[in-house]
Amino acid sequence: MPRAEKQRHARATSSNANLRNRASPARLIKLYRYISEDQREMIANVKFDGLLKIACTTMPVDFANWLMSECFDPESSELVLPGRGRILVTPKAVANILNLLDKGDEVKYELDVDAINFIYSKYGIIQGQAPRIKEIMERIKQNKRADEDFLRS
Image (cartoon, rainbow, N blue to C red; front, side):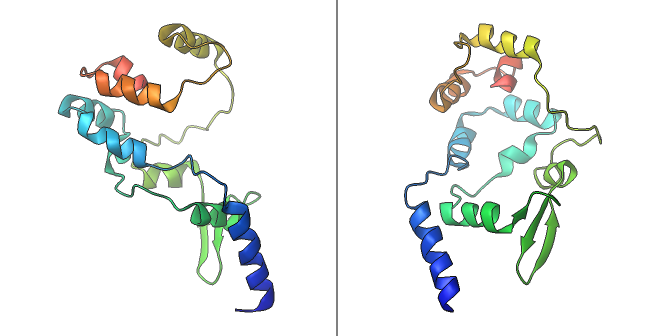
């Protein structure tokens, strides 16, 4: 391994030593056994059934870090894989990979204050604090109905 590559690898490895990958799909996969057929159908009806097909429980930190810091080009919205080519990262591509509904609508990055306030009051969330993932998982496990509350969770 060339010296520069060894140094870059050493920096990447040491900087990842204390990282925690919060994007791990393990928690989602653990919920599969608690979701009823009616709930699965509800998820499929809103075109989110790709989330029920995730099978990999881990995403190694080094891999995720490499993809985002070494390969992702934010100016072109592409993953540039050395010696392999480019993968365009667009809403359409993500929808295609996760089997999500894509009506071609523009993705809007704005806050809907009414929706936020509704969620805060519905679930007793203190403004400015995000609910803990464990709380959301428990809410999903306990909800045996295929209803709007389940879908929001």
